[in-house]
Image 1 (cartoon, helix red, strand yellow):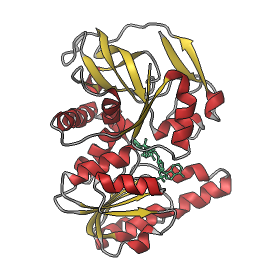
Image 2: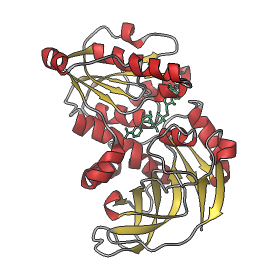
Image 3: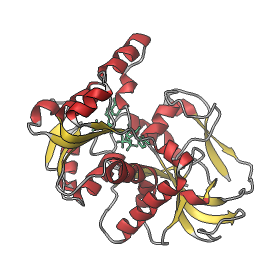
Image 4: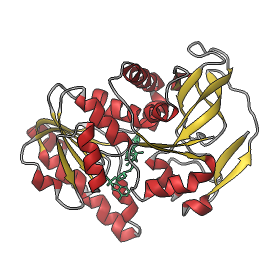
Amino acid sequence: MQAIYLTKNGKAKIAFEKHEIEIKEPGKGEIAIESEAFGLNFADVLARLGLYKECPPLPTIIGYETVGKVLKVGEQVKNIAVGDRVVAFTRFGGYSQYVITKAVAAVKISNNFHVGKALALATQYTTAYYAAYIAANVREGEKVLIHAAAGGVGTALVQLCKLKNCKIYGTAGSDEKMEYIKKQGVDVAINYRERDFSTQITEKLDVVFDSIGGSTFKKGYRLLGSGGRIVPYGAATQLEANNFFSKLKFAFSFGIYHPIGFIMQSKAMIGVNMLRIADDKPEVLQYCMQNLVNLADEGKINPKVGKMYSADELNEAHTALENRETIGKIGIKW
Ligand SMILES: NC(=O)c1ccc[n+]([C@@H]2O[C@H](COP(=O)([O-])OP(=O)(O)OC[C@H]3O[C@@H](n4cnc5c(N)ncnc54)[C@H](OP(=O)(O)O)[C@@H]3O)[C@@H](O)[C@H]2O)c1
């Protein structure tokens, strides 16, 4: 069986190499999966460019999720059996035909569950579920702002906030994405390449989901009303800060905050990093994934799959994600 290794930082076409892998046995509490497909996430682009601190030293296998059949189970695994089809979160190691991960990071799915939709549930929907339903605890009818609303996590946030009948402001960067997010249920779609969202929104918000960072974060925080929560979970604009001074400028552009300000204005900032949740609270990750599989089975959410590529097209897939051309989830089929 093969895996795709990240061997160099830089452009997608020089970064990856496919190699045979050594087949190891799953340890206590682990399962081994023969993968049908793996998903791509924006953090993979950051890892490839050498901008992701958590990425293991190169050469390494990146990737946060896989869908496939369980080949082997380690000791003390109770929730999963050999032969089950699962969607699983992987803490790196996803770009492989043979994946070992914790059983608690896997959830069973039916044989007819669409492979791309299942991949979307693992990292992007789980991040959105945790951010919206646990961190921000979005309530019925609240007013929310979702940045990069046409992306993987963005689409998931829109669908999950729609289930709570929220009024949704969504931003994205093209006319095609405007049409898409309106169809998904965004009430006020703002193309932030043409308009400043902070002047387009004239009412106070309850929740802002921010994956952009910098001045976008600062403007979002200012839009919150009393009881408002801002959930930072990414900083995509760090791609534009490529030297020491622009990085420093980027860091300061978030704004400076003090707990007394949070008390006086009754506002909250709640950071989300799903790697930390996967490491320290894997049962919470599993809870989110299981609820999402149930919501999908009930037809209450419907992940959008932008495109499934072949393993030989990994470079194209990575480049499209980096160039902001993708909508919803993209993945690679073996
Ligand atoms: N904290 C966590 O645990 C966690 C977990 C998963 C994802 N994330 C973060 O969530 C965000 C979305 O992830 P995803 O995998 O779903 O990706 P995605 O949203 O499908 O793709 C990234 C999107 O970000 C937008 N964007 C804004 N500024 C950008 C810039 N300077 N460069 C490139 N893209 C930019 C683009 O949409 P427009 O064209 O509309 O601008 C782009 O399509 C990422 O920032 C990611 O790091 C965090």
